[in-house]
Length: 372
Image 1: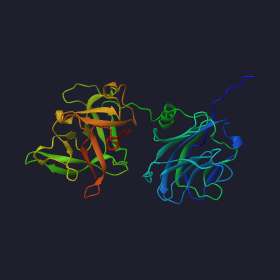
Image 2 (image 1 turned 180 degrees about the horizontal axis):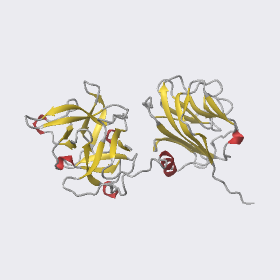
Image 3 (image 1 turned 30 degrees about the vertical axis):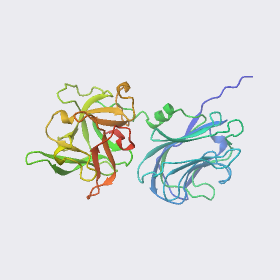
């Protein structure tokens, strides 16, 4: 008799709910979608406080030997610690990212595991960030179990200090496309159009492209506002930009923005344009001495930027810009260096922004977010 696998999933927590170290939600094996040899879990997570090896979720009856799946945070560091049990080792997996999650920031996490494919994969905010592959594929197997699923505290192991929402359990291995679909729910799947109000979040540090009203002095009649990365929470006064067309280009507000296209950014509060220029006459950033990024009131070709998905194949990057896309921006007038920032801080605690590199560095990654 032929048997057909039926894809099933359940949202166990809609939330968001607050979780402390002693809090837990427990779901019996029989109440979960029936798993054969693969499963996936997705959730949204915000960490408020670091603690000692806190549990996000754990399925099994014994913490040390039955752990498919389990996801923790590294002790007092908040890097993701993803594990499973195999028939050769009860504790197999990966730790990512190395520098840990930021506190008080929502993340989307996807954990997928499959014995037929012999791998564990981990995704953060829709991006694939790590995997573990079984090498001895004929002998080594993933060991699943019929124990309960603990969200938060598991047996004698403490849970997270934070919040959880949209916890979903699937009885198949989600594809990368399905992970992205889960990350962008229907309310988030919105196109970016000309006239959209947006923010640009620096992916590596979580800070938003902004200004503090400080000026670069480029001469008596030529002063530009310094562009920086501010905080990790949106400042509706200083972080909001409007998508506009390229200098001299006629566009229609409401039309979708095509990728690999030249556009501009107008700062909502000041009416100034996102700008860059060469480094002649010592016009460089204060710390790294790279190409300045500024805001100015003049509308010209120094305000033009090419927008592409991060690490795209340039001219083959097609489609329209969507809320949440991970992008790189390239300055046209100065031979396309990419918008850049890193963890270097200026004296006031803001983060230096420049144009630097070919767009492939992690510090060239920006997430575009629509402001409703």
